[in-house]
Image 1: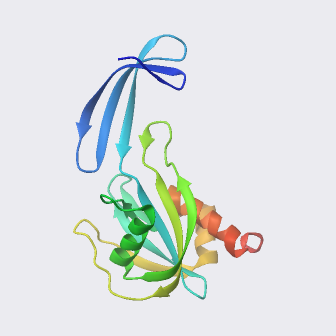
Image 2: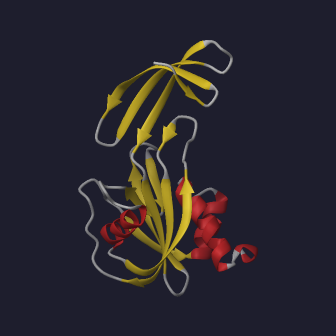
Length: 185
């Protein structure tokens, strides 16, 4: 096998680890400098992140302990895409499951790649508005709290580095441009 991948040439590839959420692949490569090497890549199924905003510009974020980073984070509602779901369907399902909220207006905020050097896991971001409140139905692995805060406070928390989740940071920046509050914050 010899496959060109940008300035790299892949000569062999193998899956070294796989579970329900991630796959780790190791490629034997010829590096751009012509020397042989090994390149590891982790693939995680893509997903969607949602920031729900009510008519008073309060946003609904999740506060939850995240095992990988070893701490509680404040971030957008989100999760991985299930089989045959669109990014928007994932966003709607996750918003309903985690918060009980449904929305009549959806704005696509684009995609973010959280760590382009070694991880493939696109995250599609949405702003949900015109909200209806209902009952949440959390997954067995979720123990989260919904936090309702003014958008301006969430934006300041992001600027201070209190909110660190990549998709949440990018979504807050893009929402600020949409609602025109960047200059005021």
